[in-house]
Length: 242
Image (tube, rainbow, N blue to C red; front, top):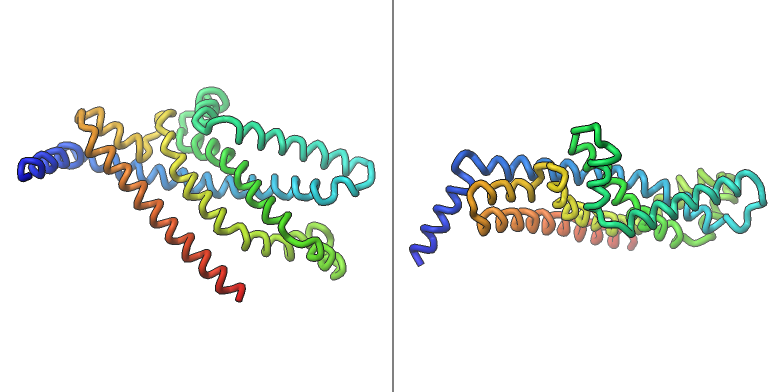
C-alpha cells in the first residue's frame, strides 16, 4: 500500500509540479470558462431572435394577409428552420473545424473562433428552449396586451418575455452546463482548453492516469457546482410563484 502512495506521489510531482505543468491545467480551465461564458451569451442572443421569428410565424403566419410582410416573415422563418436543421443535425466538432479551417481560415484567434462556433451551435438549442417558453404562454396574455394598447413588439417585450424567460430559465441554465462539457473538443483546433492541457501533460510525461483523472475531476466539480446553482434557482422560482 505504501508503494502505491509513493508511486501516486511521484506521478503527481511529475505531472503537475515538474516544470510547473499545473499551469497547463490552470490556463486551460480559464480558456474553457471563457469560451463557455461568451458562447452562452452569443447563443442566448441568437436563440432569442430565432425563437421570436419562429413563434411569431407559428402564432400569426396563417392569419396574416398576403403581402410583403407575410412573404418576408415566411422567408426568414424558412432560413431559421434551415439553420436549426443544419446545426442540430451535424456534430459540434465538425462545425468547429469548418469555422477554423474554412470560414475563419485567415484568422489565428482560435478562442474567438471557438466562441463563434459554440455560440452558433448553442443558439440552435436555446432557440427551441425560448420558443417552447413563448408558445406555452396563453393566447389570452397576447390579447390582454393588445387590449391595453400595446403593439405586438411591446406585448412580447413587457408581457410575454418575462413570463417565458422565467419558465425556461432552469432549462437555459442546464444548456450552459451542457455547453461547458461540449467545449472539451476545442483542442481539435489547437486551443489549449482544460482537456487539451491534460493531453499535453499526458504527451510530455507518458502518464495517463493522473492528468486525465484530474481533468475529469475538474469537469465534475464544475458540473456539480453549476447544477447546484440551477437547483437553487429552480427552488427560488417555485417559491416566488406561491
